[in-house]
Image (spheres, rainbow, N blue to C red):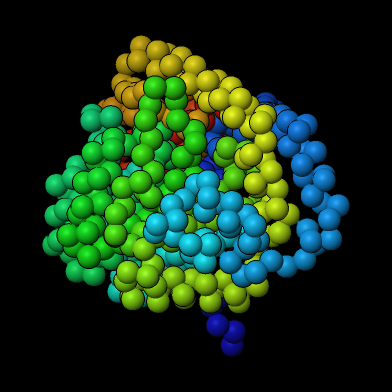
Length: 407
Ligand code: PLP
């Protein structure tokens, strides 16, 4: 007889940012309306136009034979050199320490899944779901949450981080997402320096997801990991999905810092490289265009304009949501997301667009068992207002709320 093909831990694998889409699409069809999609951070799908000058760079590079060839397992060498010179720090990193992946999503999976089974990582709550879910895929490897506090501008409690690193076995790394998804928080330099110190004192390495490093509002200062890491081992994660923005390129990279100073860490990075080698390499063309786009004179004014737009929309959103009872908001420091916390959320039924939509939502809630209140709210919002957002509990948070985009 054939074996059951479903893994016992299948329920751990989820990505709510896309899962809400299946329900949203069904509601759209049943209710004959058009959903406003505020769930996913893809500026192009949201309607931003890719500028002609970027398309021209892609066209030009695609006429070279090199664009059709494999790259080195680590990635296209001239681009790794460009990344080293422009985003990284050659005192703690070399071109050999820069590894390209098919999207930062792949890099996250490779990093987390190549840790030993007993390893534990400190992960923020709320967090970008791939980090936590990637861990769930790696049977045995687990994560421990530390909280970002909405009452303190979503800053972490450093004492909590220190205690959790100190008093749990096998904590090997601390993950920081800065600028943050989902909250839009750009962390204070002192906070980040303290986290580096905790890692150093407790023999951990650091993982900083910095994919939004260039998307900070005017007047807000961003601190990058390579500026403060000193001699602690660490990984910075970056990509081109958000700032260029070419999410369909599936192109992201990691910069490994201080690999030579820690044998265990270097061996672990070697495992990531071997895992990548089994897949040969990442897609060549996006890596080839990267230096041309970032160094084009048009890039900075183009990005500045977009960030100004998100900043304006964030201010408007704060003003709007601050007037609504039971909703709490914090002004983000960057990125294009916005979190609304739902306080004392009533399990109310909103007036659905049609009877069929009402029936679908009721059936969904009845068949899904114990649905978190903010998921219920998100379904009701889709069925009544036609707006799709991601429930905050989908980001591993014990708080109720939702994340929406400012795109
Ligand atoms: N890390 C964070 C914090 C993100 O928000 C995202 C995408 O939304 C990713 C990683 C994945 O990016 P990529 O499109 O390069 O896979």
